[in-house]
Image (cartoon, rainbow, N blue to C red):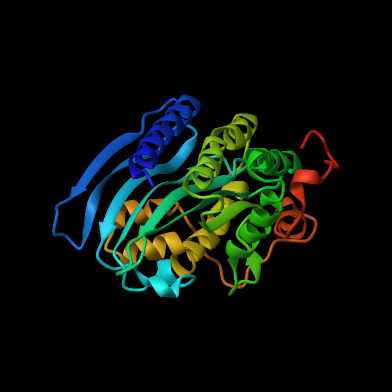
Length: 311
């Protein structure tokens, strides 16, 4: 286990993603480095990169963190109860991008490594992460591109991985209290250590490296489309679902808050403008209604043929 290799990769990944997003937006991400002193509840360091009010991205954050703690929080042990109470080390890159244009989807990506050090036992190391897309207006071409890029990234590490990680993503990013998906999914995995450290780390790198080619072509295709206040209003309404998921279900948010992480960095995933309405539903036959009927349901996006190629 060489955690320095993981740290070096994650910092380089953060820098490459920020450079690509800055080139697409034309604006600059601010940098906010931080350090937790030895003896703190959560020791370590990190680098937050944030853009607000950009030309393309209304708000976006790409964060790196590397922390150590005395006790794994409950959100990290729900699938590994034998590690409850163990000291831990965790590092990762997590990002959320909220564009201005309602025709450009919000995107989330996370890649991370955990190591737990139980008493009288060998260290336990595993990887987790994935990426998912949350459109406000559905385009089949975009959904297919995103999923096919994810599948291609996983293919060298096992033909079956996309078939495992895609349904896992659909199940994870699901608002149980609303009985609806958050978006059109992607891939999600956790507790992954198959093939040992080197093989699992290689798979993680493939996922991280796939983010820019999965998302930036969609941004370039959609950010110049004209929109009205109607589309912005629907975007703000649907962003409310994003907030609900992150605050109620998201394990990364819960881990950060439970472990004493930096609140500003943890909550950078929140969109800047959000609306809620009481018992609202879109009118039948509208593009807003089609999001629910055609996109917010599990589909085999990677293997479908587009019914409208221009879309």
